[in-house]
Image (cartoon, rainbow, N blue to C red; front, side, top):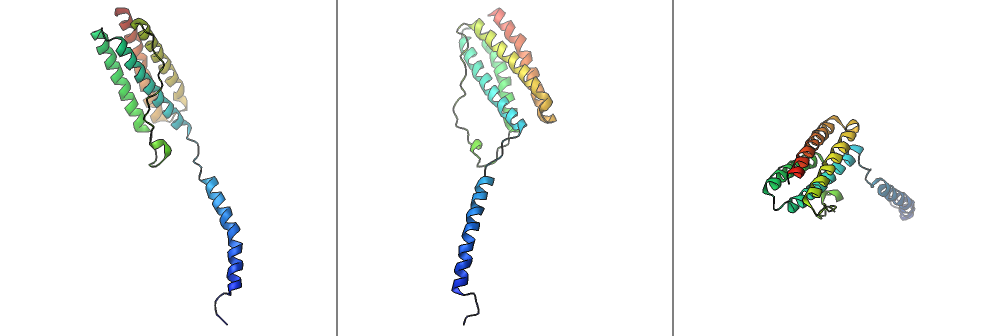
Length: 172
């Protein structure tokens, strides 16, 4: 006789363990799904996407203004502010290494075309700036204080772009 468990006991214990392992694996799969992002993360991603679109719109309008150097200079300064906004927003978005969102596909955002004439393009851009300022200011009450402060600053900046664009439209 042996001092250890019998072969029959080992086989019975192994057979009993299989359903437990299968159940445990199923539980891991269910628990492995990532939770939805917090509302402030969703808003931050939305603000980042909006800045990317705004930058795309500025590039289009700068192309339309190619023959008006003073206008291009002013638009380039405003574009630079939007690039700074984007950098500040992206710095707030922390994406865990290895997550699917950590590797953007690199494709440019789909930007709706601006009107063909420069005056119309500047008007459309001013309307976009006004809408962005309003949208950001409505989100302030539901954001954590530090993010609300950043969004308020960006909203104010975008609101100040509206009169500049209106003046450029009148002088171009």
